[in-house]
Length: 220
Ligand code: ADP
Ligand code: NI
Image (cartoon, rainbow, N blue to C red; front, side, top):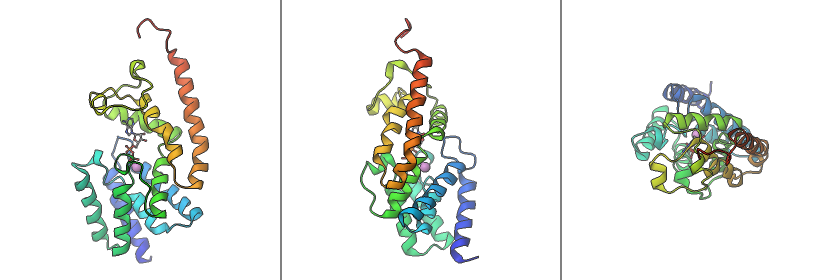
């Protein structure tokens, strides 16, 4: 086994142990899907696969939602990279990717490197489509939120107060974020992979509306 293979397998074990019992939609299998997509995109787009896979594996270890603070989360990743013996250049690159890639934290700014754009796309691909729908309902349940509230749907942008007061619902999240992700993808190959997934979400929401029969209820 090469040194890189050994670092990769230790990192997989570290992340698996940390996220295997997560029930917020950021569990180990989310990481596996993102790492696989990142490797595939790296191959097609010509990015460095080692950096992409490491960053993909570690990206949610630093997630604000799963740590005391963003800084504490980033420190956990930094500590791991040092402990595993990742070379300084790779470690710095992985930290750059992870600290800037999230939808909230990134604020839509373009990622600096090709590898960053690839990992961000891989994470976003897991937020578009059938699996993404499942993750969204799981996340909402984890937060104690409703499946849907016709009085707050569809709200494309929510104020911080509405969000905090628990007005956000699972279905609203599709309009607020998931349907917008396709247009935010960085690479051509991710855009191709996203197409079918996006169409599926639109169809899913149409079916959801038909079942809900919005507008026909005296209870609205
Ligand atoms: P990222 O880390 O890519 O910036 P998040 O961790 O915020 O994104 O979101 C990852 C996934 O978790 C989303 O695609 C969605 O499925 C779910 N999720 C995040 N925030 C919400 C929310 N407010 N309501 C429902 N699901 C959410
Ligand atoms: Ni993620």
